[in-house]
Image (cartoon, rainbow, N blue to C red; front, side, top):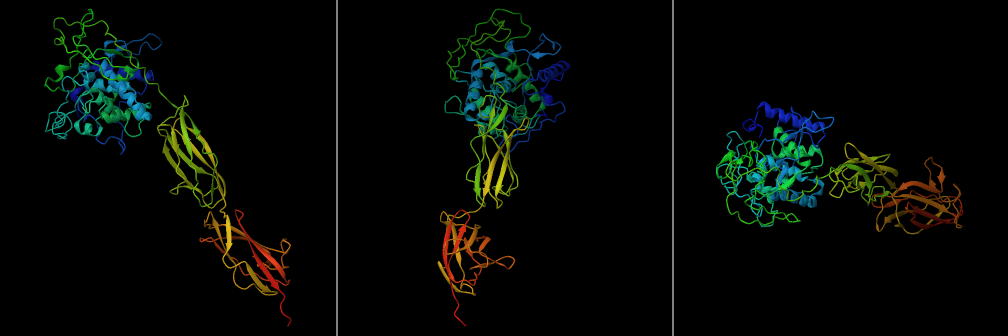
Length: 581
């Protein structure tokens, strides 16, 4: 759109001043989402990702209406600042069109609550794209009475997009055109089209279908439309133009200040050029229904009753018009002093902010060295009402004197909270360092909220140990026990590797033998010891004890082997007196 905007936007001093006033007013009043700065490059900073729309623009960056909302000067300390007025004819939205926007918000609020789509954003886009479906000229099911088609995207002042639908939607088999009240190009509609009115068709000319498709398009990826940066990215993905963003933002803020319902077909149409029409009437068909210079006559009576949305937002019915609707300036056409109100639109969607983070029951995590922790760290981001806050960034970081790591080997991991506000960290694998450590969790960016989850790594253990070389060994005084003594450790029937083992020689009375007074192991310093420590099972759960010396005292002894975890086995050691020389 940036290359073509000069063909569509009025560049007179008046419109420039009005646009500047709106931008200044929105910024000064801290209205949700001030437009990008004037020096922001066309297209803004939005960089589509694989999870976001790939077309670059839903509309193909074609034309749009550049009218800005009415202005008024309020009383108070900022009386010199002009703010949009929400009590004029422009604040009226045709009944079926408004019902389509609110229904789309309701539907997406169920299917993608984390997006927090405000219907006023759909209304703002619908205003600049088609003047709210040409003032609400739709039938009882919400389909436009005549097609709303944008200019041919033939590269002549617009992007060059060859035909993708064989003219099925835009009646052009050479180039694509934007179609319908939300101005989707056919290739984008093929991907994002919806059937919102339940007629079995995905029709870009139907305001219900188009509004839901636009809502899903704006919510693509991980966008949260309660956040200003995500609103900017969403609007720029619809049409890559900073001026377009400014215009949509102006109408968005305007509609947030208040709207009212008007009958279908009686909405105020834009003055500036917009999409062409199927009949080729072009911008002339988009003149306002009511001349702005008309006096304030009595309200006119609509010639075609508008459908009244039912409580669930479905289109109502309307009787055929007995006669054509008078055109501006024709006999019988008058401008109402205030558009009739046929219903009260929903209140503006409140801005929901991240207010904290909760541990959802992770508790203290415990795992044996080398094993994966059975539980996963789960947290929940909440808003000020205590409800789950979706699409908040979460960082998990392992801290402390530990070699525990997340699956994959990293000491930190990132996630995004889901629709219920929860986020789950990857599984944690314990290292060989036993002891306590913490996982530090940070949610949000500004502000940030954090908590710590405690974790403990215990030593490897076994619940059973069995000898593989028998339970009896014999030696004579002054000699060594013949053969090796080997045991195997298991845990829940599986091999238990790396398990610490202690071997102790006991007297026949069950007391530890004093060093040097019975069977013994060679100590690290060469001295004889009756208790062996610091040995572990191998990868197969096996441990082969070093050679045992019988000592000089004959008798019956017990070799007790104990593993970390409490598994025990006894082996009988018999020391016989050596024959006399």
